[in-house]
Image (cartoon, rainbow, N blue to C red):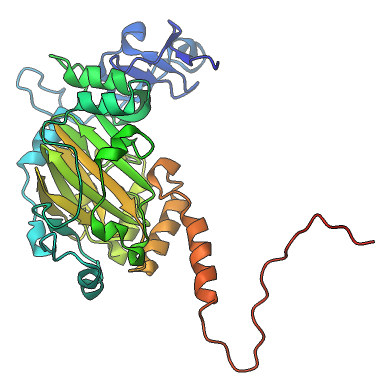
Length: 398
């Protein structure tokens, strides 16, 4: 059995409930309490040196500030100072801001109206918001379903990917530990489940995807089913590799909000916005810059309980979760707007996007599609068939 990684001077396994900071020299992680760094003060550190590295590289380097020191008593931040995404200050400022309504661009068909013909007619180039799940042909657990039920059906030992929101940092933990944090009377951390794969668990028996996703013309059965469990005041916004990115680009994100509320910030994938996004994703101050401010236009789209949102390929989006919520989502491929799917895939490759946020086996699927199309293309008269790949046999010639 593989040993559990240990960290810090205390050499203990990772504990999601304790603040940790990474040394910029040795790249090891340390508990703030073990090295004397408060979580609130960590944002003021430009380069952190652990106690061991301080011997050779000197003390940590603090960020340069303009003007007088911060007025702690007044609770004010200095003008022009960056606010880290995921922080309480960032969330307050984001919720107080005004954005153009997504009603300017989205379509709102009923569940019964969302057909293949509807998608073909509208090219599925803008987000689609279905206000009620009636007519979608979708099956979900009963309204009384909770995170405790997820733990029961999936299993407490299931390893899941989690974001520590205040730090916008990834970690892995067991589902049972996350549910314990989620249900605690007092939450020391705000945690966000990136995606909980349940297609091979007993939970899959309680969920059926919308009928439009199951149509062969749009790619057949989805590759994965996912459930997201979000806690209140969670900003999945503009972190590297999470929300605010070209989220699972070369396909479509489907999200049904079972409980709670989410606020989506949507940016159209115009050539200019895609170029700005790629530059932003590669910048060093990404965690202190709201990408929506750099885009041509950023739309605000609330997603409320019982509603389902379909987001087309390439649409850049971030998510704010103002209250505890439970969301079911998934991804699927189809034959609409393939050019944007390939463009998004190339952007993901250039940005070295983690596999967790890519559509699985997308390139392999494209080869199969290409082979299928090649077999149906008309050939000029007299042209021999395109030779296929070599075949192999165990038979030996004498």
